[in-house]
Image 1 (cartoon, rainbow over the protein chains, first blue to last red):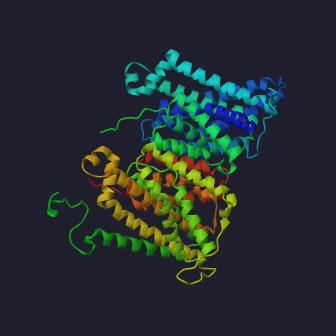
Image 2 (cartoon, each protein chain N blue to C red):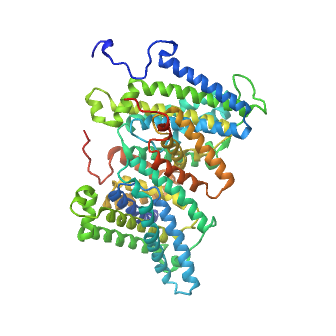
Image 3 (spheres, rainbow over the protein chains, first blue to last red):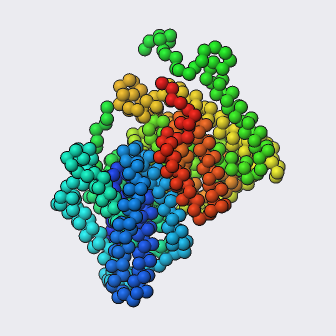
Length: 298
Length: 330
């Protein structure tokens, strides 16, 4: 029983930051049709930026509670400064090309960003411990969990609902859905598609950076954090179905629980449990859980 | 089906002479290339023969990817067969005491085929991003297993000693050159065979699949069969490459199966394009040169250089460097 609760809570915590990151990935894919390998690099960028911002906040003697604001700010800065620059200066030249070629473009971007983060922040690890203690501890039965973990779960729920609400209940969202459905038709109806592209990409990157910023307190921020995140969030969106919000949520839950189950019950399987789940899902649902099968082109 | 005489002769086959058969022409080209490379290798400094050995070994893996790319799918997990080939060769060397370089290379290729073949019918159903991701998942499962299995050396991997060749021990000062010859020899043979395969009926069915899958099936071709066979052939190339690289390095570790390794193979395949087999090895050499020069001159930014280089290629040479000299025949 105790183990089951532990697995559940660990899995939920893992799933929540993963959901935030994967939601960004699936949004970018849905609108721009780009499976962004560099998504993990933006996650890392968010984590590094959070480390710097929280450090400055501490230097300016802000109250510890403001470190949360500093982390938010870090994600916003990444989204407002880096994302539009990447989209305008690089990605727009490759729109409409083969999906796999676009993966290669973002792979190149990943290689570049990997070195750029090292040049800016160096190779030594950063620790962002202040925010982790903000929410105190929560006791449940004989065990104690860090409150921050639950805050992260709450944040994931808020983000998920917010993105769903914007997409389905606002004008901006409806325009975005129109572009997802057919960029050509949307464009002929007077939608400025390139603006939607830039906006969606920025929001997607914001979510990656936010995921990075809010996991920064739980990890040591160092070169290599991007590499692991990319493949795991790929697994999430592939399991859920590319471009689907519900899919990202369910995918994140499945991956989170599978991983925490493996960690606590069969540690040998930790490294590949996620990929086994992904392979099994793809075998039975080739397009993912929440994707309708598409007709073949003649 | 019409009579044989009504079958159109493929363009580019010149009538008459010793070089009339494409097989003879490709064999002659392979022999010529091997002689030239052997000559270059005998004069080249040690670092250059090693670099070319790595380029040829890694190029074999990318050659397999190009074979799949001709059918319109790109595997993002070819590190798996690369690792299987490497581990098979290294384990056979250490556990069974079989040390012949050519035998080990072939064993690597066969091991990769044996492990990859059961997945071929499954993978042949997938296209585009799903094919890429499923192969990626397989390679990451392999990576996870290799990291955890202590019998395979865990995350540190293990070393293997110096191979022999046809019963002869390799002398200290010549070992690099001889392994270079073996690797380049395999590379030219596989390149020639790949060219012959690409121009064969099945090779052309693969190419037609890239254009329009449904049309191929209406014409009586089996797309899934072609895809499955291409995947198995790519596995052989990958396993062969893995075994040859391991012999040259003398060490193997799980990162052989990590996704960034697979990414580099795809990088080379895209850089080469799917028109020319020679381009694959040129591209592989370019990658090795860029890697070794930038890692010694600017160790902190060599990935950056590689990324910018890749972007420039995709932007300005979308069909790969092979398109520079290989004109499409209509």
